[in-house]
Length: 131
Image (cartoon, rainbow, N blue to C red; front, top):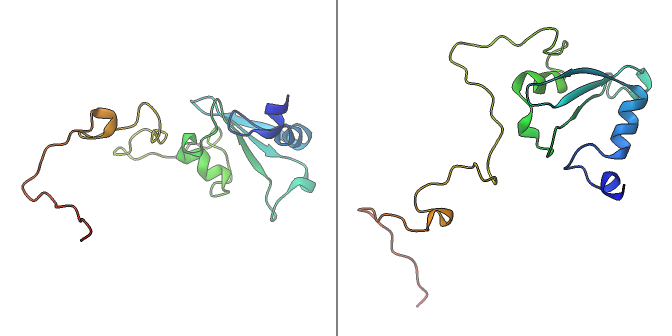
């Protein structure tokens, strides 16, 4: 119970869930399981716009939100992607969350997690040492 009150990284806090429950409606869900809500009561409006929320599935990380849902959350698009899908160009790749800091992050040869040994280069540097 205390964890749900004070932490936000494992899901929505109690306050967010109460506000969404009182004045929000489910608009849609993305392919990763994140759920998107919008307020319907004008008393919850913010700067003349309906408030829009995302409740993440799992760890709360903004990079998990795809471009189409990001545009809807920030009022760039009036209609959610469930009603009006974002047109994609043929050269666009699928959305991927930022993997920095995770076990799936890219680690170059010579990184500490890869053994820490890097190959010397022709113009290798000389470290500064105080006199």
